[in-house]
Image 1 (cartoon, helix red, strand yellow):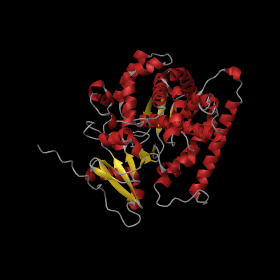
Image 2: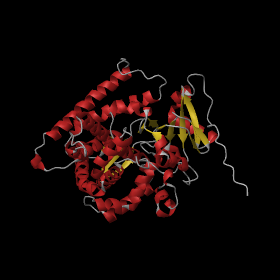
Image 3: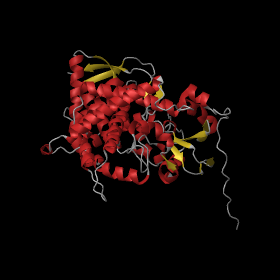
Image 4: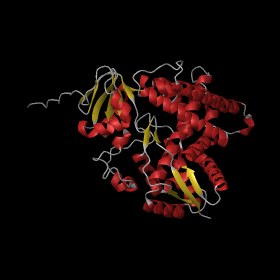
Length: 459
């Protein structure tokens, strides 16, 4: 009996590049996402582009996404590709690898269990109600807001109250949000550059980054010191208080000051950025889908009525959750993740080389026609039980998948539902312009310009 012969591993498809710089010119002109979109149909679900002596390997098919992020994770690590992010967050939960990452994850995981998130829902609601009250005081007859700015401010205040047990206030939230924006812009620019100048070189970008980092370090220091000086009698347990109280199982040592700083700034960034963008992009999609908005309003009125939403409500609002999932499908704040290949491998029958930067591109996976009918249409029914049945988990991963799935996934989803419920109870909204909002794919997927939303108070 003859045995089947394994298909040979082929060379990775992709565009030819110029000597030395590879495909850098096209990447710079179109941006990584725009270039990947252009190359997807001609080259298929796995292809490579060159930047200098390294290759960026785009991975789109769910089968290969799962191999990179779940089954073959030992070969795909957060290596030097994350050095730009380490300039901002240091070595924390986002950037650590191996045993150090496992230890830090175990330390923080309890804070994000469902039971603990349940205790935070009231704080999320209180911050949101205060934010809406300020908007109403500022615009008593209704008016126009810039949604991205307002959502960034709101989610930063939620992080302060829920994870740190402190009120940041509007001015501090605004300053921190602007600083994070500047820092992420430079991190993205460095990631796409052939030559990355060290921070001591006084380029305008480096100067802006250092100013942003000084502000964020000062804010982080203030938050930590305030938590350290909190009287024990308050009995307020937060993620920050748990970090400060944590002790190594073997040595009994507390976390070093730099480790606490790295975790706080990581939580500060990750805890607000994705939820703010989810809500911002939600306005752009819902503003053109009145039938979806009407169905959301009906479900909110039926399940919650006029009271403050609870944790149980967040799970019983099944259509609202489908809407949130569909926003994340089309406008996932984290449009790609990157891993460094430790050794050779094959993806989709093509050869991955050691030191390749392997990039599962969720923005494209979430539009793969094999798994999403009418993939560019905003349709929350994509997440109905009937349509979801049998869909591979690698087809949808706005918070990544596998062991390194975002620790704050449930926190973000619950917060988004709480904010939407309270907004729908108090106001009607419409887009000030029906023009499409452009995409800026930095570390996160940000709007290219302001997102102006008209608010009309209900009572």
